[in-house]
Amino acid sequence: MKGTWRRAGAGVVVALSIFLIIAGIALVQERTERCAVVPVIAGDLLETPDFANLAPGTPSGVLLPAGWSGAATGVQVGDFTVSGSGRSFQLLGIANHLRTPEVAVRAGQSYCAVAQALADSTSATRVRLGFHWLGAGGDVLRTDWSGWQEVRRWDGPDDVQPWSLIGGGFTAPAGAVRLAVTFHPASDDRVYLDTIRIRRGRFPASGDMPLLLPERPDGVTVLPWPRGARGALSFSFDWETTMGGLIHSRSVDDPNFDQDPVARGMRMREGVTTTVELFRPYGIRATYYATGYNFLIGNRERRRFMGDPTFSWANRANRWQTDAWQQQSWFSPDPYGTVETDPAWYFGDLIPMLQREGHDIQSHTFSHLYGGLASVEEWRSDLAEWRSVAAERNVPPARSLAFPWSGSAGMSYANWQALTEAGITSVTRTNWNSRQPQYHIVSVNDPHCRPVPGHETILACPDFYLTERSAAEALVVIDRVISVGGMIDLWAHTEEVVSPAQIAAWKKVVEYAATRRDAGELWIAPLAEIAERQQAVALVQVESREPGTENPELEGDLVRLIITNKSMTDLRELTIDLPFQAASAACLTDGRHCLLRGSLLIFDLAAGETIEVEVWPG
Image 1: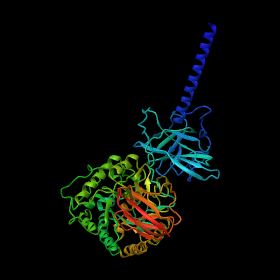
Image 2: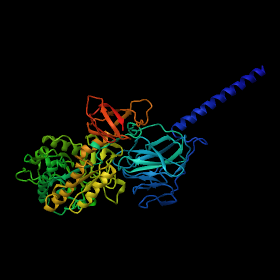
Image 3: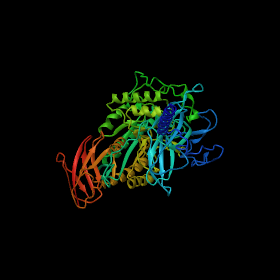
Image 4: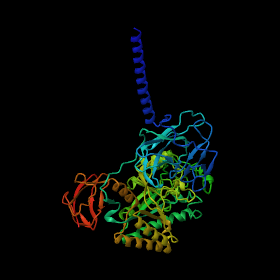
């Protein structure tokens, strides 16, 4: 009997041990799947930042814990923490990031990073993580990106809710020996980051994951611009009546701020005629970024726009010439006249001329507000009002927007979201101030349109201010754009193309651009069309018909390619660059014509359309 009990007891112990082992394994798996610490197995690989040992960690010399770094000013030590004591990191600026020290990794192993985050701003925002895998020589082998994850907004001293948990996890690629993780914001909202950890393990995919672009056969390139052009160029103007930035002028970012706003309004009006005449001989279509009063033919009825706002941010502290706009209605200077009595204030009579000439009319905002200072409610009201008055002149809703005063610095996540919801797909005149690199989404030194972080349906496009003094440099900028396959927008205010010297400077640049265009090197189009084409080309899928064919260079054999336009934009003269010189080609869909020029295959491809192409290598 005792032996029976002894055997039964041993069985219970064995069963319990097996249960505990299985439960332990399950617990370890559960914790590693969410990047939680597991002693011995998944401890912290990243040392706790030593806030008592600070060293220059950004290009501007901001002090950070040793080994930590930031892209620009705006990454710094903060005192807002999860525990309520100690130090944390502050991250500010849409073009900024915080980078961890490197940690040792092994190829094929899974690693994760987590942090707690909180937005101290006017809106919640989002953050994503970049995993930068480095080889033995210190070169980056690959970068993996987490999705954009929400960071909640702090609601004040009585807010005791938990911070937002953000993170990501990926597998180290072959050859990886070190890992650095970066944290990137989706706006200019201030974000605090605390309890940052890197461990072995995983993190559940969350947030909006990066768009996976279509794969293409090795060596096959879809060129961005029509007919194989090597660069793209737009000409544009910030075009406003006296009611725009002229009467509301700041003392910075406006070379003519101290001049009579009515006289400037008349020059703005005159500049429409001079610029239209400038482009006509070359068949060039420009973009006119218009403010709201540009669509009015008068305001005898004393219409009120946007709820007749005052803007508290328009003050001396923000470099306005007066504090009056904090109490005075923004539109109160309206003379309530017509284009006949007050032609500097209303430009609605000029809209038909621009439409007849084929130029593009886009948004410079209705009120000429400062984007980074305006609230989301002010943005929504402004966007809706512009759309309403534009419709009165048969101008479609804006797809592109030029920031007044280059005022994108300070844009909250909610503000960018308002632009997205309004249908804006491209922006220009973003912040360029050399002292504020944390806000530089694009730069003339790297002339390419780039997705706005966190709102990738909007492309930010670089611009160059074309004046009499900068005309010679503009030619160099065009050459650079062609050499790197990029894009640039050359711009001014219409009031700056009225004198003989101003017109001559612009004509020199336009003639040069037209020459490069006629040589097949440059595509000239309105900025909105350039941005939309870039987005559409990125969605073109190219497949080789033969199973298992990775490289379409088949030693003289026939190559069959299936090409699909997965965008909603018709692609005129789409250009495929093949990895060989072709002898002949045939488009097998609808008997359409395919132009062959060396290694370039050129054809039209409508939105959503698929065609099959046969190519015979030379």
